Length: 244
Image (cartoon, rainbow, N blue to C red; front, side, top):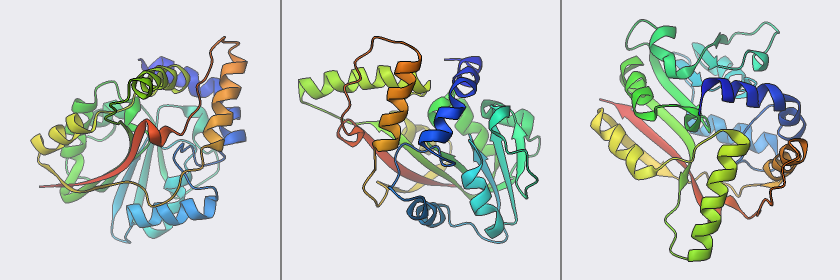
């Protein structure tokens, strides 16, 4: 996995993302955007005194939504073409979020750092989380919504899971995370886990399914996409950790 591969992926498929996902590039989502907006507000809970960093901000939908409710929002995205060109209250930064220490020189800057299905693009998750720890204020919160490998015992499902991990990497250039390793990493850095739970809605997989089929067809790949509900193969979880 490389930065250039990620940039190439999004530059190639931006039009398809807009067509199938709209502004919110999120695979695990409710059917209606309005319900997803409510979910975001409830998960992030932006406050008027807070400075928030959105890592892997996509088209900026989440950043733009929480900006009026926050003191200041920074949004970092490696893909320049996705950054909105219209004027905004959000501070957009075209950079690799694995290089947060270059983008932000001072420590203890942010009240909250969020990853919304974007941590899986990191080249080195452990190093990135250490940088997040340094950038969070004391009692600042790291908020993740990500996909994790699910423990499966059925051989057929495990085979399908392995195939889906491969296709997710191939189609999205995104790696499915290991929850236990992530928990251990957070705890070792003094990022104390406050909660781990599934999003409180039933996922509508139609947007991701149609996007993936379009990408496969556009790349003229002879790949059979064994589509099944990803929540049978992976866990989508919210993890909130607090900086000690």
